[in-house]
Amino acid sequence: MSQTHNNSETENIFANIYRKHYSELCIYALRFIKDEDEAEEIVQEIIFKLWEQREQLESVISLRSYLYRSVHNRCLNYIKHQKHKDIYSDKAYAEMKKLELESLEDYNNKELEEKVQSAIDSLPQRCKEVFQLSRFEGKRNKEISEYLGISVKAVEANITRAISSLRKNLDKYLKVELIVLITYFSIKII
Image 1 (cartoon, rainbow, N blue to C red):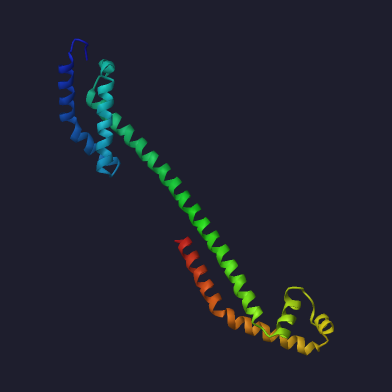
Image 2: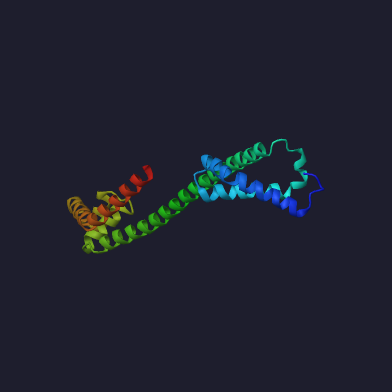
């Protein structure tokens, strides 16, 4: 465009360019990106950029080719940007779910510890004492027998009673935990 054009003529030229090419460029952009608003925005940006660079347009041989190539390149950049955004969004979602699960695990572990401790505390005193010596202190039945002054058979009976009582008291809770774990892993697989 020569510099002899005044502002009014230049504005008329660009108004004609806009009217002539805007719709077809939007349709062209929609072939790449399936979002009408984004397609229109890309085309508006291209035409605005053309307006900003109007002084350098004398070197453009085919305005139509220039516009189509510009829209094409801008659409490809948009698609590439969206893919990166989606990747980061997926990573952020996965990280958030991981943190959620860790929090849930911490909560569930603490809750399970509390339930186990409560179930142990509800055992009869001798049964509780035998169980703790066996499971938490790692003592053998014979050692417990000697330490408490009871028979090995009494030690075995108390351990059996303790395990049975704990299983009964924690059964409902452990089933819920199992359901939560199964649900979590089935969601993670999907």
